[in-house]
Image (cartoon, rainbow, N blue to C red; front, side, top):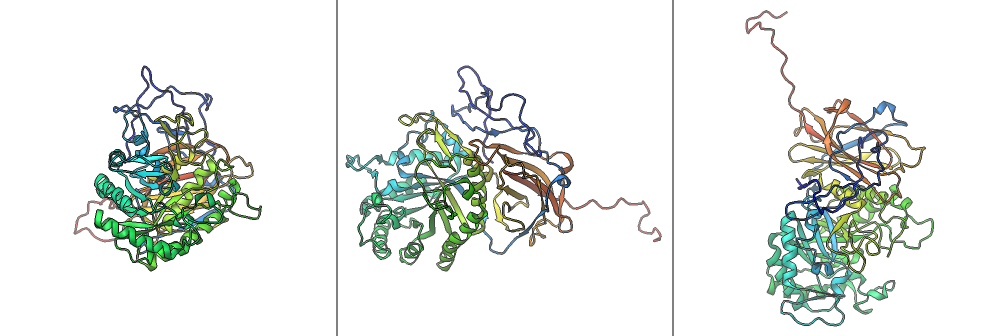
Length: 559
């Protein structure tokens, strides 16, 4: 469980803007009578002086109500869930990727920062440090050497220890990229050894370089750190050199790679022969066509981001990575991802559409076998510095400060952090793809179902749709008496291009749906509203009580 510290404001308390959602799961969410954009004088001030800002988060919506599916419009979306042998697992596998320059941020382990509390809300998150900075702008030193002119950030053992303290506090797992751009295996191995000491078992792996397929690329000359002789084969030789240095400085330290978006480089890492390979890591941004034609499905637009075609594209591209990983017996990680790789702000930035996509995409990756997903983020300022990041700093671009807040996609990650640790079910969903269903079967028998509705809630033509959910096939032994609906939560927004989302925390389901059963002979039909993610949690039902005795005893006549 993530910790939640909510205290009423006192003297000098910071002001927090919260959009309260009352009755968040009604056919049309009902807002309080006061202005939803007004300032609430509620501060979040835990005992250690951290503060947490979550615009749009409602920790106590007061109830979970759903409309009668009979009032919904259109044919039902039918869902088939299957528990497959060897299915992927989830639990603490979604989190944030940062540029390695952020390792030197003063926010880590600071009493004046709420970063640790913000990360803790994600529920045992994945943390990854790499990005373009590690191979171009980060100077590592464990002996106080002066930084070269190209360095924009200097990282020291003390920095790693501060980050490690936060990782321990929030129960995070960590991966760190090493500088391959400057071709210095000994220095990279020294950083790895200090990381191994600082993080211990929380350090799952290091990666040798970030996106080596971009070290020399005709479309990105500004990122070049090699020349035209750089190929997957020369990359493999570098891996061998760096691996030897790692074995000397940090014996047995696991290595993931290649952190690339191109299949030949996936195979180059997997077939390099270096020891201690931990995982095959991918990077992928589905909306990469920054100035593409209207016919492209990869433009940075809300329309493309919420198109079912993007989900199918993920299944195709990431599915190829899954095949390479399976061929070489490696787990599959998505170490850096986000909606778009296009620079600057665009139509998808900070939108409710991004929140919906985040849930649908993260669950799709998990169904494909991705065990760890990190959404690329930054600790720069909200205004002017971080258009696509799930979190950002509240200060100015020049002085971002130490207080961060979550955006729409952060609320989506909070929702994903509430999934139980368990096995991912394989879904088949009827319809046009605008409504999808994902599910996780918890190790304790809890069933978590997420219904993602990508339709625009501001389009009056879209109405509530009934979603019919059947009991998961293959799970009869886990819950022989079926499941009962107990908790519900909803992520909602006024439109796909709105820059605010609202998240109602899981609360007991009330009304006619309270305790609604789900069994093999009794599907559960629930409503889905446009522009929402609905999470339903069902507990394994107890065995039915035996029929009351008539008091006849063993010798009573049988009629």
